[in-house]
Amino acid sequence: MRQAEEVEARLAGRLSELRLERGWSLEELAGRSGISRSTLSRLERGEISPTAALLGKLCHVYERTMSRLLAEVESEPPQVVRAGAQAVFRDEESGFVRRSVSPPHPGLRGEVVEGTLRPGADISYEAPPVPGLEQHIWVLEGAVEITANGYAYTVETGDCLRFRLWGPSRFRCPGPSPVRYAILVVLP
Image (cartoon, rainbow, N blue to C red):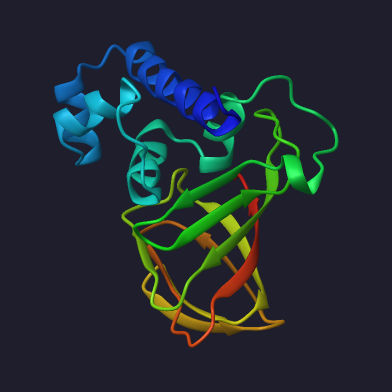
């Protein structure tokens, strides 16, 4: 089994564990997340790979950042993660690539993530995984339009945007080239 398939299988198992730890049925999780029962069932059985939007909804329900959830499916957390070994999540449908740059550790409050969006990519999250999550978004190349807490910002190469997230958010790459950015995430 390839490393990506192993991570997806562990992720499917962890999603199932999180639901069972709370004593929720698939129907209850569907009601809380807005994701259909059949999609949740297929995710937990590893029959489909989650999109960034689906993971965002589940992270909100389970009050976890995406990095924390992904760290929970990793084996022993190392102190140093070499570039070639950093966990990469690809959502081909939305054009979003997410690289977990920080060595994963569920007990830490901060992390560094690299995001890449292709031109025209548009990702919306209904709510933060953890209310009050602090984000610093530093654009390394290109431009991104970010809407957070009802305010819209255009952030370009070298610019850094900081906010605490309480509501919906949206990331859109206006093009003409992809945008690459670093997100520094700090739990409240």
